[in-house]
Amino acid sequence: MKKRVIILIISLIAITGIIVGVSYAFFSTGGMQEAANTFQSGCLNISLTDASSSINLSNIYPVTDIEGLDGTSYDFTIKNTCSTDANYQINLESIQV
Image (cartoon, rainbow, N blue to C red; front, side, top):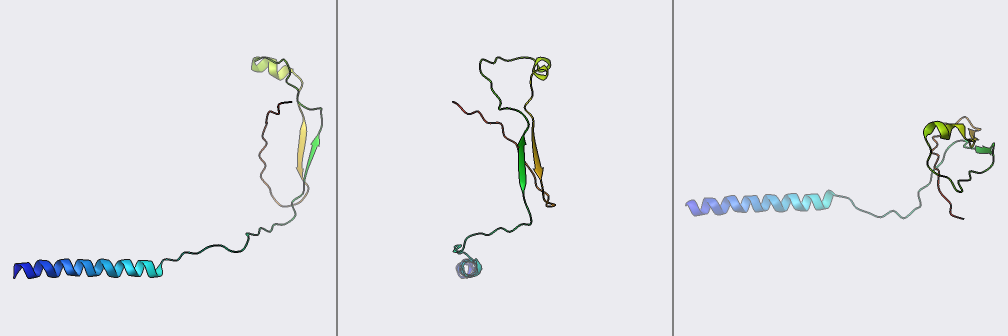
């Protein structure tokens, strides 16, 4: 009798596991995207104005902040000419010539 109860409990657990597994497989969705993503926004017109010549760091050496602030600055302006808000990120990258 005790053996039958154990077999019954194991069978119920196995059947429950099978039902849960099949249900999960049936109701979980998967697929592939076939169309391209599209993005639409309002007016976005950005203008960049250089107010001085390019940055030249030939024969330069490390200096203190005070000495660096006394040097010539590189000025530029970025302006969004539309009413749509935009976030900007400015990167300073080294170009080897």
